[in-house]
Structure formats: structure tokens, C-alpha cells
Figure 1 (cartoon, one colour):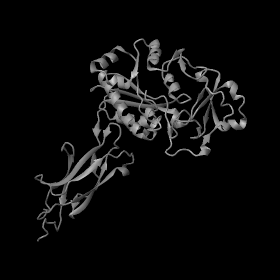
Figure 2: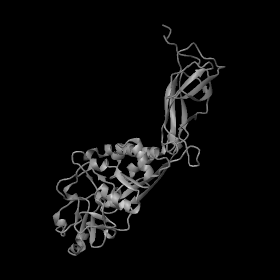
Figure 3: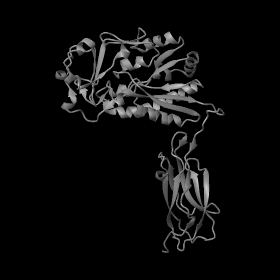
Figure 4: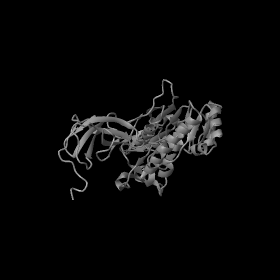
Length: 397
């Protein structure tokens, strides 16, 4: 469970995990509970028959049990599965390897809580760093999933979130803020944030039809009877002292309510589910195999998008003679395009022949493609070089 993991960030986590050898990834989504805050969202992610909001809105009960702290959540889990554990992801990673393996061996269900995005965004001093926190979260969650599958081969990992968030680079104008005159029932809220408001049913009777048009009325039935929820439209905020203005959540926008559900497991080599990774490849697109100028271009195409199990790769292209001597400069070519449109995966490589006395039209010469990191030759294409004037190093002086 990663606090405030927006769906788009979750997709980036899935993309990274798809590059694992034998890694299997399934991505879906679900709707978070309103109000989209941690105090409500985390209990909703636990196995339960019923959630109930306390009369004063100070806590949420899952099947009558408190859920505010990690030990309390573990107690809820053990009520369903006696071997279940709940702990922070940092606590798990700081364990010795033998401790981690023993934990996963003895427990059928383990909840790991990760909090990088919300911890950064909800502080006024660091709210503008939230997208750096998202990038860090992608790497951390992928590394955490890998670690779990290494400690417990065959484990099934599910990555999800309690809610998302909205971020606006500039603070809102006054007309985008709702104050006390807009909230005639503000004297009796049980939950009140910049993007949500929960009030007792009896207080709603004082709300006029005109005032109702300012908000979106939200059904609170999942948290028990006796309450009604209200959310401002678009990215409007309720006026609240302190806190953050650029980073907010709690409302019912798509960015706040749509959270990812990522399933990940690692298949063993040789099993039917095992899919190995492979490098994206290039092939010559140009039809001609004859060079008649010392400066020329060759068009290549990346055969598949660099997605999922197809990994980006960097190649070196160079022309050689029959003995393997290089007769042109070396050109770097990146096979890293992700577009499904083949026309957008065309690579243009420009070459210059090296200084020489001349080239034999009888050849043969070769365009050699090799992996830049390993130097391994991937393919060779036969060419004829018939240049009437070949450059010389000192231009005859």
C-alpha cells in the first residue's frame, strides 16, 4: 500500500516491473473511498465486512476494530488470517535476509506500507517536490516487489493505494476558494479538509437548493448511516487555515479517486508463464546497398516498440571491408522508441567514409551493427562502395 500513488505513477511502476526476466504484470484500477484521505482509504483496503465512521469523525472502524495505526491494522488482518502481518516497508527492508524470508514463509498475508508521495506533498516546505517523490516511489516500489519475490519465490505481490492527489503549480484565485458564507452548515462538520466535507444528516437540512449546486453530494453509505459528504467541483478548495495549497486530496476527482491495482509475480525459468526479456532491434530500411558518395545516410527501423519485455538498446554502426577494417566513422543508434507507429520508429544514420586511397567497386564491404555495451555483432549487411573521389587525410598538402 503506497500512500497517494496516483494511477499514472502506478503505470510507471508496472512498466518497470514488466522489464523483469520472467516477471508477469497485470494492471487494473479501482475507485477509492470518499473522502479520499488516508484515514478512510487505508481501512478500506483491509479485509472487512463493514466500515463505520465514528460519530465525531476522528477514526474509522473495520468490523468494530480501530484502524489508525499499523499495529491496529495488523490486529484487523489477524482477525481474518491468524498468520498475517502489517509493517512499514522500511522496517521490512531493514531486516536481515533470514528474518525477511522467515517472515514471508510463516505469513500467508503481509501488508507493507510505503509513504513517500504523501509524506512529501502534505508538507508546505516540500509540496513542490512531489513529482520527484513520485519518481523515487516508482524505483522504490519496483525494488520492493523484486525483493519480496526474491525472499519468497512464488509470492504474489499486489501494489495499490488509498487515494491519489491533485497538484496545481500556482495557487488558486479567490474565486476558486469556498469560504464560510458558502457553507451554511459549517458549524457541525465531522470531517473537513480542503477537498472534502462530511456532515451529519440533520445539518444538511439547512442547505438550500442553490447552495447544493456549489458542491457534489456524495453518498456516504459505505461508512455507515447518519452522514452526508460534499466535495467541491473541479479543483476548487474549501478555505482552511494552514496546510498545503498546491498539493491536495480528499475530493472526488479522477486524479484523487482512481488508484492503480498492480499484480506482479515472477515465473521460474522453464515454466509456461516465463517470458524472457529481449533487446529492441534495428534493421536496414533503405533498399539500396550501393554507396556512391563519401557522405551518405542509411535509414533503419526499430522493429518493435521498446515496451514490456522489449528493452531499449544502444547500437554502434560502422562500415568495414572484407578483413574487418573499419572504413567509416562509427555511428551510435538508439533503439528506444516506444511508439506503436512504425513510421515513428525510423532511425536515420549519417556516415562519412574515412580517408583512403580509394575503394574497390568489387568489394565487398559490410555495414556492421553491434551492441554498444558488449561489442557483440548483431548482423552484417553487404554493401558495394563505388566512390570516384575518396577523401584523404591531408588533402594533398
